[in-house]
Image (cartoon, rainbow, N blue to C red; front, top):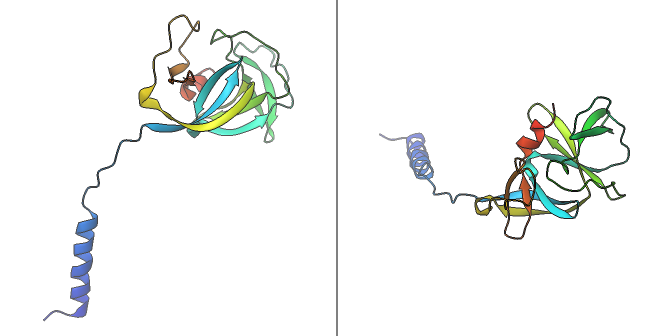
Amino acid sequence: MRTSGDADRAILLERAAQLAQPVEVEAVAHAEMLVFLLAGERYAVPAMALREVVMLTQRVPFPGAVAPIVGLTLWRGSLLRLIDVRARLGLPMTALNDLARVLVIEGATSTLGLLVDDVLEMRPIDVQQLDAPAVGTVRRTELIVGVTHDAIAVLSAERLLDLDP
């Protein structure tokens, strides 16, 4: 004879079997990116690697630093290395203006501050639709993952973090 506990158990097992059916998931091709200006050109970094965006309030030289490291700044009570990738991207070196921002990029073992001229927007970018950088547009493209159809160069957060010794 079945008790009400057995009936409840049978119903739960049937529901569990229905829920355990594989669900078809559409591949996600979009990633949230922060779009910013650097020497008048638009670039983007993945939001997943971005810890914070802060105004550049002070910068001190880092003795013995090798480019692209350009100095240090205080961030949350500790020193943060600042990098400027303009030379690596073949962009002109310009003075920082009052709108300069620091993109704090964080990896598993390091954190760095990427100097940018201005922050524009956060937007989804279809990473499967990126084009290869056009030959001759920048001197070195090892930092660029690809370029969107509206000319935003997407930078690799991992490669940026590799610049930080």
